[in-house]
Length: 270
Image (cartoon, rainbow, N blue to C red; front, side, top):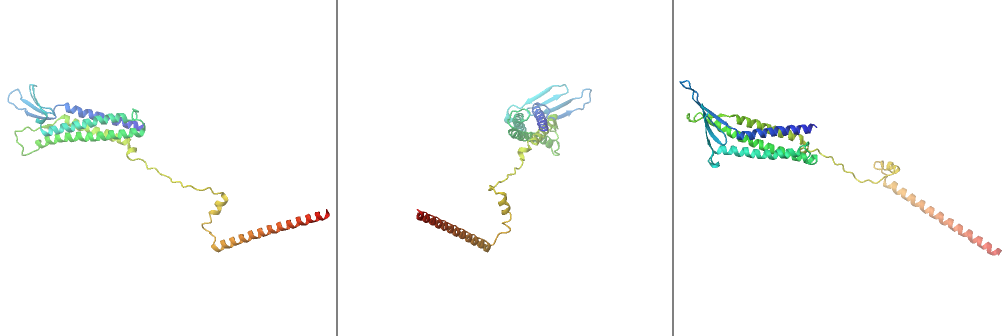
């Protein structure tokens, strides 16, 4: 149950983060610059310059907006092209990661067994991490461009100095949520990354030993008889065997003599 809750929470965080990132690409006021604000009459003339990834605009105090769209791709400033590319790469990885996360979650029952689900969710978290880092790199590149112009002491004073707009902060928050969701995914699939070590027991084949011989073999390693004792025992056994064979042969000879005498007496009587 705890694993399922972590996965759902991570999915919600990562999805919310990608929603923030995708919204920032269509939002205005990535950078803002204000001019005017002073006047000797009752009407204060104020104007704002603002830009995003697709156009540059100017708005005056009468709320009239004039914009210049970026006509073609190769006419755009190189750093804007870089930010576009990084954000689109991040959104692509995030789309794949969201699909894999939806399939690999335990509550959806789409990936198969637990081991397959964990592997799918691990790949989804990797896609989220790569996409989140790509988005952070894009936002940092844009912020760096604004900061270099704003804090340059030898910069032309007639050039506009822009401030950081709201979409950049929203995009950084979304990237942070994506990474947090990926961490929740990784926390639930630690068994795949660090599997438990399996202890293998090796069993050797042993012959069955009766209790009498078992008790006898326990002490043979410590009290092994000497060679002379073994030889004397073998000679004793050989003598006993010869005596037994001699007694058996004498018995057979006695029996044969008795039977011959009985047969001769019978013939004489007849």
